[in-house]
Image (cartoon, rainbow, N blue to C red; front, side):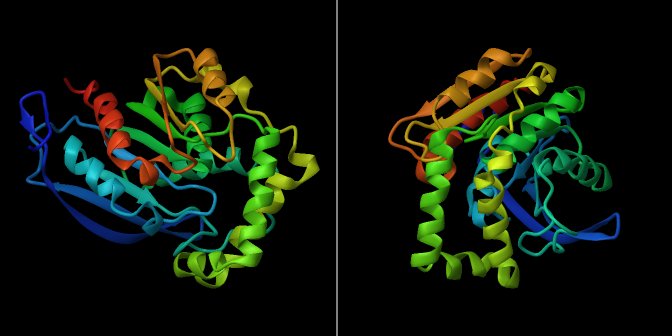
Length: 276
């Protein structure tokens, strides 16, 4: 049975188109997802997918297309500088790299004329979505985060140390190279070194949460190897706008792959509230 939200059959097909964005002398790889047939509800949100700290567009798999098809919403994805098909990151990676990504996100959304954005961010992408919403809630239809961090825990450090071991003693590097090519070593080491840097240990974005007034869904796997549920509660208790929390049992750091059907169901319900 196709999922129906309201009176609309939203079991639509999705067309992908890939392209490059040129912004401030840098090239970003991007992808649009368009619904066919085109929805007659022109005010539906555009789902903007923000990838994780080792991620890229292809690493989302078929999840964005499935969510767009079920909700009847168009989608937009891009790769941040240093990832996938985008240009390398210029210079060193700053301590406030997550905060700086909000400026780049703002530029990308404006350059591509993304209408009615609803951000869906995973891990680093989730944190970037929160930071962006803290500054630009009035421009957003909502935010969904998966496994976002608002501060660093001991379990975060433990999880990243384990990831380094896996990277050095398995074929993880070869797997990541399928998406990042000759940038793979930089992508991994930059991510791991930043989060393991003692100077970064006190990073904390909680002071920004009170600026979030748009609708928010906070989703996390119960067994996330990089974060405890204190992250979820910390977000819930400090944002100003309406917030819904979802903890998925028997799930780790990548809910949209590890609990795909449940995640689509939960996200669809949240998104559908916007246009019922």
